[in-house]
Amino acid sequence: MPTYSFRCKSCQNEFDVKLKMGDRTKQPCVSCDSVETTRVFSAMSVVLKGDGWTGKNIKIRGQMRAKNRRIAPKEEAFARDSKEMAAMTISPNVDGEQTDTWVEARELARSKGKDTTTYDSYVRKEKLK
Ligand SMILES: [Zn+2]
Image (spheres, helix red, strand yellow):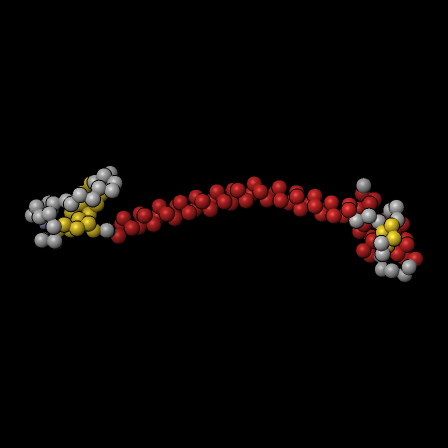
């Protein structure tokens, strides 16, 4: 049961009473029996509340990180796949003129006096297949 602090309005005495959570019944002063007492929110209870909240936040952050770790490899694989897909959908061509292979496309580009560096990467990929 949580301990609540009370202060007596008559004699200024402060005392602690153990109450059920949410119990708001007035507690008579332990020294003068006056019912004119008020709840005192001690600094300690505020600190405890703060710690509890921070702990919860850390727990949530940890869960988020764990979740992100699980998702990251899938996203990387997806990015890799879509990159390969993009490379595959580009069929060998020079200015829209289709060729059977990228090697041919590069030769055609070279014969046209074009820069073939962009074709080199496609030729490399083609050879890996
Ligand atoms: Zn009192």
